[in-house]
Figure 1: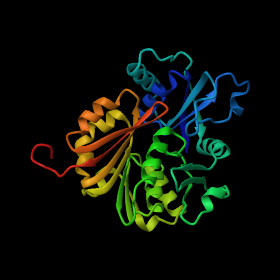
Figure 2: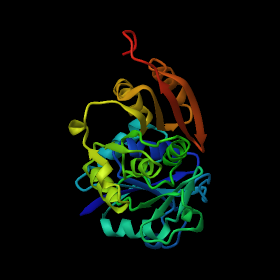
Figure 3: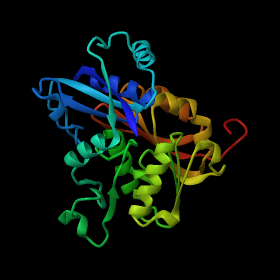
Figure 4: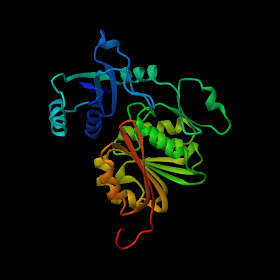
Length: 308
């Protein structure tokens, strides 16, 4: 299936807000390339590793959208997000899915998070650190759904899950993308996981990664309208600040009293408003930061008449 690819010039300063805007517009995947490469068709896909900064001051940021997306509308929407963005160098082309997948597989390498969690591409050997008896190894093929572990928002969530005692617990991964967080939770000892995403491609990717990791019998992926209406002792939502604000009552209702929640996809500077928003339902709210991205975590209070 072909996809619409949008590439834009950016700098290490503008990249975080431009990437956030593209994801808010429904980009299926976002990557970076060197703006000064001599042969664009041979550029390596680059996504900063955990704790790393982009290697280039001037880059091209490339986003993949579903076939049939209106390029003019995408540019107009980007301009409305931030009038200071440089859209003069925007370029569109149609790409086949196998081109994107091959580039990703060529560049991705095993990553570790916290004490036990390891994300390993499905076609690579296990590194030595992932061979320990208590290692939680996730074999990943994200396909065209967001979530490989290399982005700081996903890394923050993986580290949070790694630090919890998940044995026998049920987990909700809200905005699951590739399903990486739900699968990781199961590998870390969770009994069951539900994963929710409004993108059918994410549901397919999550189901595929669950089967690849032998946890398909314990993981169900749902579109929002089909998902069970219930609460969970552990909830993780790696989406965007605007969605976290809008969905706050729903996410609070899905977190069991005494349960824990982690919210990610938040740019630095956006956390204060969300801390105030979620304080209506959650105690012990705390902030963690990686590069320009924030994770908020807290503990759900018992529902009452004032807060729901």
